[in-house]
Amino acid sequence: MLGILTDRSISDRSVSYADSMSSASDLQAIALAEFATAGYTGTSIARIAEIAGLSKSSVLYHYASKELLLEAAVTPAIERMAVILDSVAGRPLSRARRRAFIEEFVDFLLQYRLEVHLFINQAKSLEDVPVMVSASQLVGRIAAFFHTSATSTVDHMRFGIALGGAAYLLVSGFELDTDPLPIDETRAALITVMTELLDPISE
Image (cartoon, rainbow, N blue to C red; front, side, top):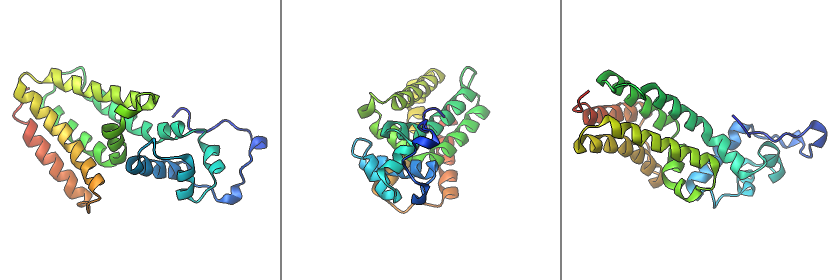
């Protein structure tokens, strides 16, 4: 992943490890939660440092800017979705491949729920942030692929409701702060509903 850590030599470090610094992954998790709840523009490095129990300089030691922290936090989700899309793009979407995609897509949504929240709700307002531009372009690729895979208005709607609805369901649940269902139960239900929606589409 590019641009995660600042390139500072040991002699340049003004931050002491006596601060018990959180790992980079801890900072990413904290930042993601804050970006999703307070918004990217409403979240500061100082706020992330406060939640992590660190000094601002400790966070900036790992990430030279809030933008680089966002990039580090969401890039794994973008890369994973690109791999899933590449596995089905360029070939006819048979029923078997469609079902395999559904399972991978649901697993993706469950693993990267906060990232999906950001992509859905904040991408438009962050068009000047390169990593969010990449996310929006990927969403566009997904939409274009399934648009070309559908042969009727009804099929277009099936794809839109299945993919968009599953993503929105998880995002809205996060926003409402509702008690989540067990992951296994949620996964099985999403796969069942999406499969039922998409199965009637001809190969």
